[in-house]
Picture (cartoon, helix red, strand yellow):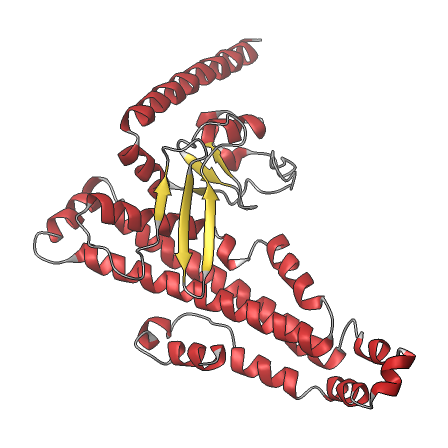
Length: 333
């Protein structure tokens, strides 16, 4: 079955109610845009004139179209809008789902009480599965339609558009919320008594090796690997945060790189602060606290996690004391 048919079957299958309020790639319509491009057809017709033009080099000349105004006006702007809406829908729904799983205080107590009478945990896992399917299917749709665009136009504009998605921080499979969903399922399956199923059987996290890695094997042979080592202290990330550029750090290391104190938090960083790895600016404003990943590390490496917690708290107290001593000196002149 071709992907277009598979994608339409997914949109109108068992998940239709779940997808009703979610944006998705208009794969079928975008494909029609490519087919109806008269300029592209004219180029393709010219390219079929025979071997004589191939020998004269006309073939390569006619096929090298860097852009197509008819396609581009409808194609890339629409695809960018759809990708942005999908990324926003995905992050908001994952945030809401994980908030239910790791709730504390009164809300956490009520949710645990409800679990005595209903199977809320299984419902959460089912929602997590649907969200992973949602982001994966749309990411594959974007990848395939861009590949089709480059094939039709003999260009690299589709490939360049992928780079633009990363620059705009809406590349779907680069979302830190996907890491959180993977950690969420591993936590559930490992400690909450859940049972493995075919969809999630390839989710794994190996922290015992020198290079700690989380691996997610998704549909259509999409394999994602996340390095869980902080690039600054070179230890397994503790109290991990993901910057909007996608890089993971221990909170204390990220705060140090942004020249803010731990108790102030990463959102207090200057807009000019750069990621220590890619040197991109403005990546601290929308950081994501990876609480499910932190819980996974806590469950897998309890002694290590306790040691890092003690070290972080000690450093936070030290920084707080220095900060308030300086404030007192400033206020008293």
